Structures are given as structure tokens and as C-alpha cells.
Image 1 (tube, one colour):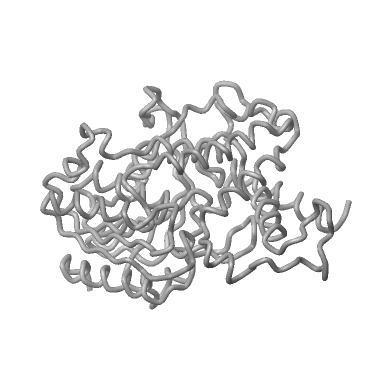
Image 2: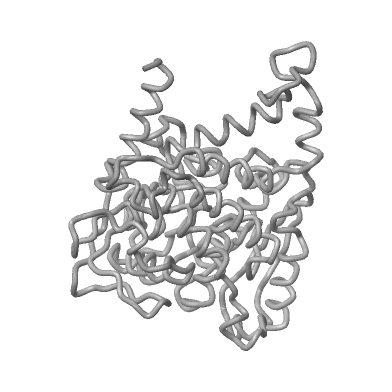
Length: 394
């Protein structure tokens, strides 16, 4: 076995351990506290892995819930135990940063259905003693938020100062504001929309089919059978990653540059840098993510449609809300284009809600919310500071 292969195996083993017995804080919910699901079933018992940063103030009014995106986790501002890398929003969360942990108490949990410690398809089904696999009920964004509300209750917090998230995290943010409007003082949905578009569902279906077509997927029982559908999951990640970027960014970064060669190879190795880059993204992803979790979480995003619960009238979803909103979009994001954020803003205006909107000019595509964008950082800091003054947070 090569050194590289051995390293990948160690990461995969660490990821498996974190899925079942996470190294950080875990909230356990027993048979007397079931999670009621949109699918008409209950999940019980279950657990939620989470991290907190900063200090909860005396009147418990400074808590911010950060919701992660599809491939994120609860290690938002701390070292990821699988990859060894800094948290995915370490540039935004911390002392003196836009989400200032000298001022706010930050909570971030792994979503239900995930693979970093919260109950998901890799978790042990108490009824069988084996991993759930596809026996786990299909989950929705609303189910994820219900579980998060139970965690907030467990932490003794009645009202969240703010809920913040990008992409799938933005969906959770909107769902929080709709499901628990009395518990959310401010909401900051980023690079998201009120429902998943047909195009986005299509991309997810391509990814799911890539996973399920891998012979090592074994109808979702790959953990029991000692295999890993890493090829299918890598292809799914490659296809999805293209949607996170913009054509301008790809052209600027890669163009048609060749990878480690002077002339075309006239074969099917990675001739171009962009090919090598996507293959790298795919192979590093499979070291830290569970294939079945990918199926469950993409399906949850596909089912998301806030207006669907209100006869197709998005404005009714926010009727009488007192939550303060700030929506952020990015000019080159074609996965969740600005028009989708504007539709939510218009619905909030129709509901006479307090809402502001910022479109950040950038060529970095959907992933811009994960990168260092000074105007974006300023928007977060400014909105939170204004909301904090309104709530009397020092």
C-alpha cells in the first residue's frame, strides 16, 4: 500500500469513527423524546453532534445558530478531526471577526442525516444493531430544523439572537424563521432560495445515480459488506463542484492550461488542469463523507419548498413575522442566482417584514460565501451589529 493510500484509509477510518462516536459534544435524545418527521415516522433515539464558541450571556440573548451547507459540518470554526484543517468558516467566526465570539455565543451542529456524529445512515439502528443504511427514514430540511430546535431547548435557550447559513444552511435559516418565528430575532440567509429549482434537482439526481451505479454501493449496505462506493461518490462530487464555481472563475484559474505536460496526450488521462482539479476534489471528498448521507441530504434539499406549505404563496410563509432579515446573494452564483434571493425579499416586503438585501459583486460563484470577500464580511458584521443594538446586546 502506498503512503497516499494509507493516508486515505486512515482518514476514512477516522470519518467512520466520527460518524458513530464523535469526539466533541453530543446531545442524546432518548425514546421519550422522539423526532417527528415529515415522512410520518419518528426517529428515536437519536443524537446531535455540535460545537459552541464564545460565551452565553446572563440573559441568554446572544446565541447565534450557524447552519452548515451540504458538505459542511459542525466544525465551523475549529479543527476538523478528519481532515485536520481549520473550520469552514474560521475566517468569519472568532474574536473580533464578523461573527464575533467576544460578543456572541455561536452554536453549530451536524444536521440529522449527516455523517459527522449526528444520527444518519451510518449510525447504528438500535432495532438491528447494524448501520441504518437506507432504513433511515427520508429526511427534510424541516426535520433538520426540528432537531436543531430540540438542541436549543436542551441548551436552555428560548430565543436565538440570529440564525445564519449559506446554501443548504440558508434553507435551514429560512425554515427556522418560518417554523419558529417567535424564537428567531434575526435571520441571515445567504446564497439560497425558498425552494430547490428543477435544474438543481437535476444535478442532484445525476450525483445520486453516480453513487448508486457504483457496484460497491451494494444497495446502501456497503458498510456491512466492507466496501466503499468511492468512485461513484467522487463523480457526484465532481459534478456538484462545477455548480459551485463560475465560468469566469474557472477560465481565470484554469483556462485550457495543460496539466504537467507540454502537449496533448491523446488519451483519457487528465490532460487539462481543470480535469486534474476535479479529480482531486472528488477523491479528497470521499475520504471524509458518507455516500448514503450524500443521498439523504441532497434529497432533503430537493424537497425544500417553503411556499408549498402555504398554497404556493411565499408571502404567507412570513405573515406577521417579527424577525429581522438580511439576504445576501452573489452576482456570479448560478446555482442560487440573485433572482431567487430577490423573490424571498419581495415576499418579506409583502409581509411587511424588516428586510435588507445585499448582492455581492464577485466572479467566484456560489462558493463565494465560503471565501474571503470583504464586502460580504462587512455585510455580516453590519447587520449583526445593527440587530444587536436593537436587541440590547452589548
